[in-house]
Length: 197
Image 1 (tube, rainbow, N blue to C red):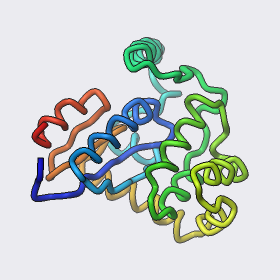
Image 2 (cartoon, rainbow, N blue to C red; image 1 turned 90 degrees about the horizontal axis):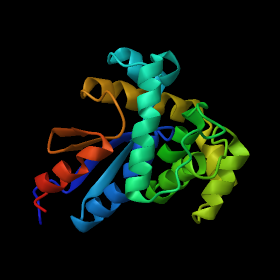
Image 3 (cartoon, rainbow, N blue to C red; image 1 turned 90 degrees about the vertical axis):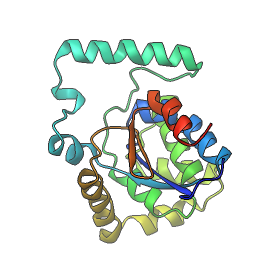
Image 4 (cartoon, one colour; image 1 turned 45 degrees about the vertical axis):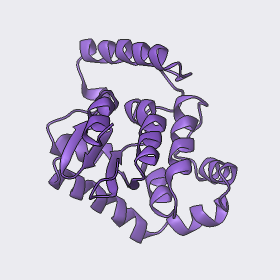
């Protein structure tokens, strides 16, 4: 269905399993409705404390346990091969976030980086690993990684996170369409309805 606003904002962390669970379905939904996705990779250590949330390491054990239960349910429901406890989690996300911001068409790279964490047990804080991932989606990995490792991109990721906080974003994934916020991959059906499906 055609809509007045042909873009949608996508706030995420590459370290979020919930963002990965919804990433492919969200991309397909945006494609179906001919929406341009504006990608906003964020920094969890900045976002959560500023919005009343907690990093996973700081949560009470019952919350950690329930998270794993819910991840398993969704993994099985969606038929994905997501690793519930990847080897490199958590790991700093800023290098990957800077790389995504440096990419003209970040969709395939974003999905590949998430898959590297949640299915392939790769360390996406490692620059050589990021370069290889970028190569595999048809980009010039080494060149792109090098160009992303600047203070300008580091500042840009911080600015993305600050702007997200100001916009009311507090968790991952968050989709914003026509100023309406949809938090969580389990809200994709509601987003679909808002788009007129």
